[in-house]
Image (cartoon, rainbow, N blue to C red; front, side, top):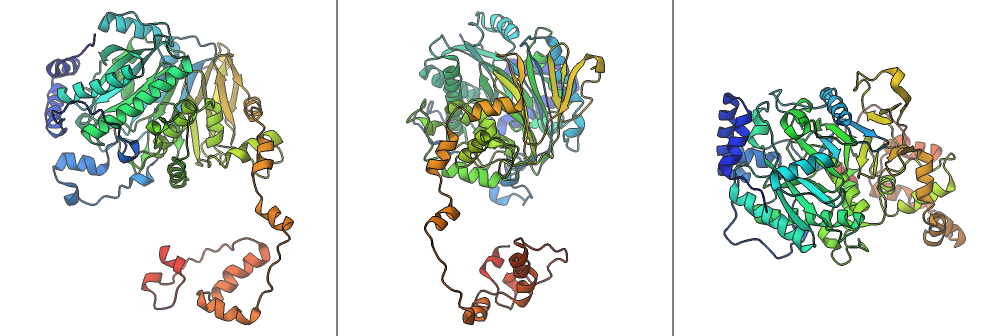
Length: 595
């Protein structure tokens, strides 16, 4: 049996929590939102599969928000500096966990305190109550979810790990869209042999929100799914991953790419509470987090400061498996390579249905969103563990590194042919429920510190002093995250796994050294073995060729000569006052027209 609220009941539940003034503001914003959300045609659910490559990701762009607020068509919108392909973030990140997997209220309260004390790392609009985004990811609060399922649905949940809960955003105040989106998610869930248990509206208090987040505030409900022991624990996660991807695809096909339908998380291990909030507002807005029975053994927290991005409820972090401080400066190349290899990607588990998970990247997602999407694909569609996927995406400096073992060098060299590095500066915290950890890219420009307490709790964050009540007498270990290194907690073994140990174990899983020797061709070695000789240089044609290709005396002296002598490009700081190639009356090299 599904638990649903009517449109009117939904409004009264929200406004009952708020003050009278806030209630009127919310009602007003809700009414305007209801007018602009597109409605479905009365044709029923779409059943024809749609390739995901044909549908943009579900995010609000600046142009979309301007369209909603002004009512003007895209062609008449004012020009903006917004470019979705240049979306980056610089944020506050942290994690709290119990090494022994002991769920407690302390983990929740420490995570909330940590997040609030990183408020200076988050951005706000002209109204201080309108944040760039903040959120918290928790290990599944089993006791809390059991109580709420009994209260809202009248059911007893299966054993822990045999059920999943999703936090889902729906377009606000549109019962038709709400009904159809739920129908899509339920149908796809049943098609995979999973049991739909029901829906629970998530109680929220929006009285402290600014106008911007209020204007786009979604309706949030929890979706309960049972495994019924048909799938193993790993395959259960894979099927949930498939259902989420396909549901997003169908919703985009029905409603358009910026409908407001968004699945924050769908997992048996973790659940995410996030939104276009300030760090202080997260636990105030989501009343679940304030409930004393809400206990967990792990949490990731994130305070977002977006760079050249438009804040939205969907872009807030943590995402599904990670949160990120910094930026991915190789993003364009990373996305292009992921698109290009999409036709060759295949999963032993998903087989011919692998296309349902692709493409993994999008120009409509931030750098963090793209990273999380690829990380989830690598960890769930393949047999790789989460630490192995992280090693592939954020390798340490392995070339010309005498301190690295040959086993690890071979691992990195082989996998460099499969996945290019996602270079920052970046620090990424990650979890899948089995592991929680963080890694710093090889540039090392987003440092973090971690503490291990005597009561077997670990705390890691991009700041120090985030848990002020923590006394030195309670700390067993304190250290910093080093460039290229990984901090990892394995809940199965209840310990922190040293960087060298986990990486050597992963590197030894396959004979990467043999694969490199047998399959990789070194062009320099190949030319030496082939005894290829160069034709003698004809100096009588030098001046003619230099003139033909636009080389000047200045270039010869300032650029080519230092390169020939020192083997590296010359450095200078005088600037370049030459005319732009397109405006120059002199012959210019073709490449100069693209600078």
